[in-house]
Length: 322
Ligand SMILES: [Zn+2]
Image (cartoon, rainbow, N blue to C red; front, top):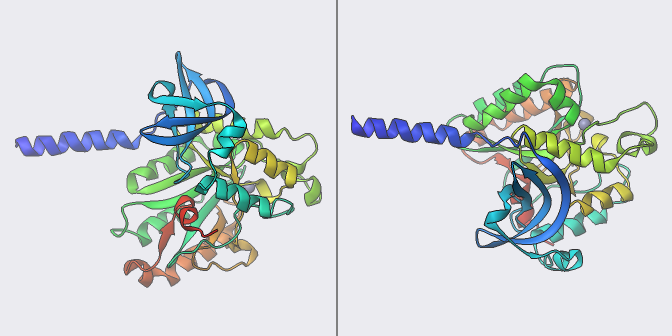
């Protein structure tokens, strides 16, 4: 009986640990670029904010690219000189990503990480949630969970969220976040706050629309993510995958890595091993979702034998040769 009680109490605690902290009353949210030491390892602070008299940093581990929010009292700031901070990154995975992104920064579409990451078998799944009047396409997640049922304890999925989607779909967002309890490991990707779209050519569309305030698009969306208990990752997905050099450089100045795709399924691009697959989960891309579900069915035997799986972008980049 005592043992049973112990198990039940442990389970209750484990349940609590699934819930991320929501930084509802955050203030003074701003860009930082500082070298920190925390948990015995070097970290980069890319943002800071205050909440209830405490100061927090959004940190990036330059090796794993994992982000976290940490109170300044558990961190040691050892360099605030931006040039020195950038120098301290030389040789790290984070710095390598900066160089990779700069190779395609002049692209009008699909700049940034837009290639297959070397993998044995599987894909990096990215799902975009652009503003939409339609409900979340839950089939993607339900089919994913049923395909991997009993096989993997964690399923990495990168979800690119726009502010306007989050604001208009609170119940869908809660449902999505609850999948953490079922083993989905989310990488929350900034997809801009407004996600402006108009019917003009790409050179003056999306983030290239006249009057776009990129600082606002980045920071307002991150604040909304944190208020909803989602830790912004180091990745940014440009709406429509459209950008120019100035946009990419601005993202880099915020410590953000643009993520493109080499397999936008609805556009007829096929997924290969290591592909960064793009589908839309906002109800507006039936074709892409259908192709993805077909892909899961094609790979179902391989999934069961653990020969085909999902990877997180950070894992792939850690192994990406230079
Ligand atoms: Zn979008």
